[in-house]
Amino acid sequence: MEASTSKSFDLKACKETIYKLFDESALPSLIEYIKIPNISRDYDPEYATNGLLEKAAEHNAGWVKALELKDSTVEIIKHEGYTPVIFTEIKGELPYTVFYYGHFDKQPAFSGWREGMGATIPVIEDGKLYGRGGADDGYSTYSTMLSIKALQLQGVKLPRCIMITEGDEESGDHIDHYIVALKEKIGDPGIFMCLDSGTCDYETFSLTTSLRGLVSCLLTV
Image 1 (cartoon, helix red, strand yellow):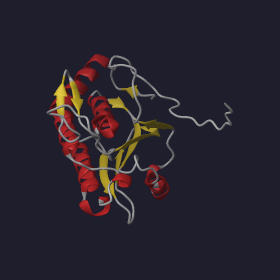
Image 2 (cartoon, helix red, strand yellow):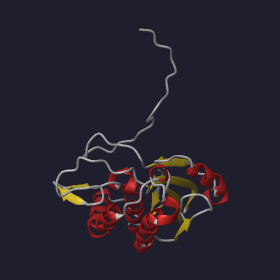
Image 3 (tube, rainbow, N blue to C red):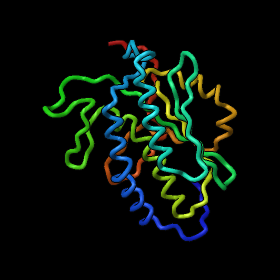
């Protein structure tokens, strides 16, 4: 991401700000998010009436609002017959748009958790947070917004940033509807950041350029 600054950019200070805000604000919120048993549509026959996806959306959106990003708007959009999405927009000073993607729906719980742990029982052990949805894909909103906040605090000039955090990724098709329906709000992004992949380790910044492929073949044994 190209960025110009009114003063020299301090990477060390930026990281310290992110770590501080994560410990003080994001981690407590992420823990509460894990406690919400919101299962993706295909695995929850009562998803349309139990309000769990809406609760997760409201929780995440509420945290973003409390972060008080400069020139930002946060709204939950829910069309009839579709799961909700969180649409966040941060106006920028540079003439292009960066699109961020994440999701707050979760896969169903499986058996085999150790005693004292569970899908909706957040536990921190050896510096790692355990619980359903923290990595896939609860981290996406928190990491994105904390990064933008830290850059804003340093006076870095940023592009317009938008993020759609959806509630249907594990089921798979409602995002198509919203991309079309929100075309005017989205605009014409120059960069797309899909925050739903993996990393090699905890020390290396990783970028995934290709996640899955499909091979069609006839195998004779």
